[in-house]
Length: 195
Image (cartoon, rainbow, N blue to C red; front, side, top):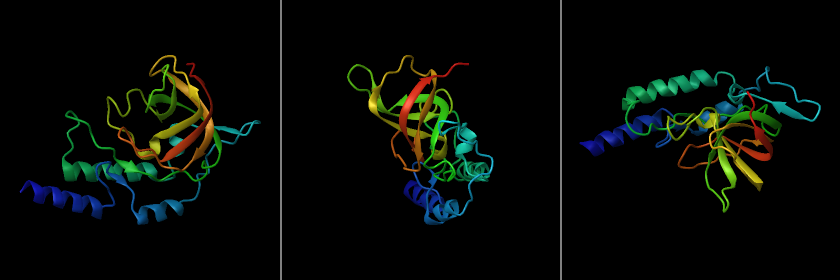
């Protein structure tokens, strides 16, 4: 009985363009649809140094919030997600904002290290939009997580302090156990976020 229910659930999720366990829309039709979405016309212009300062909303293509809301409704209806028990699955899409891919961007966020090096430095981490994302709360959608890599070790002063990061943004995906990321940023610099 349980196996039949699980098989039916996986079939329904796959039919809806969702994948388990991340429940992130990742089928060929979704990828084709994302490629046909024109770049947003409200993206900030680069500064005199060629750096574009963005916020998290800029990572979402036009109409993406409605797609994510629909995926949440579908997942809740299919699985009856309990917001108060256990780790919730990651729900969302890998659709990226084409107008930002290849640009040097500056954005704020919170660091979630994937690995610590000797001495407590890191060279790869997830940049997430809010405190505790992927650890204490449901993971954001993949296109609201940025996987960051650095050639030089990065020293973190205070865990979970907000930071500004600067680097080249790509649409290279990162699949990991904490939260899959639709974007990769090759870090050039970072600094503490001052309120």
